[in-house]
Length: 169
Picture 1 (tube, one colour):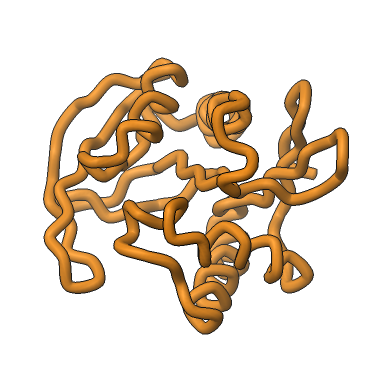
Picture 2: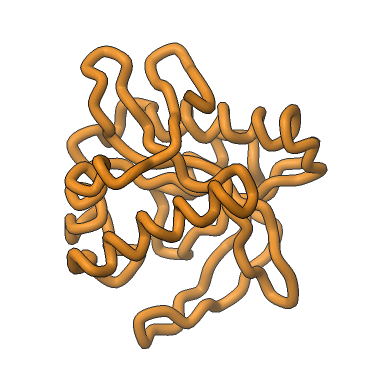
C-alpha cells in the first residue's frame, strides 16, 4: 500500500488489475476526454507504462481500492507529464463510472497532493485537464488547485486544449 484515506487505499497496479483497468479505459463515457475507449492493446500499454513509472520514479498512477469491498474502482497517482517546453509533476485520476459522484476522486487526489508535498518534497503539483472535462476540473478545484495556464495537446489525431490546475506547497 502506498497511501490510505478514510475509504480508500492506493497501491501499485500489476497485471492482475488488467480486467479492472479495462472496465475504466474501455468505457466510452469515461474515456470521452481521450476521444474514446481503448482497445485491449492500449489498456496493456497503459498498464505497462505505469509499471515502468514505478521502476523509474517510484510513483505513477496507482490502483484505487475501495476498502469496503477490496475492489479496484479507479486509478489515481502522480506522473511526470510534458507541458509546453518542460515536464511537470501531475496528479491524474480516472475512475470507473459506477463510482462517480461519491467523492472518491477528490479523496484520492488530495492524498496524492499531500504525498507530492510531504514525501516527494515537490514545490508544486498540477492536474492537466482537457478544457471540455468539467467534472475533472471540479475535482482539481476541490483539491485546492487553481487554473494557471493552457496548452493544446495533439492526441489521437485531435487538437485538445488543456488547462493546467496548480497547487503550491
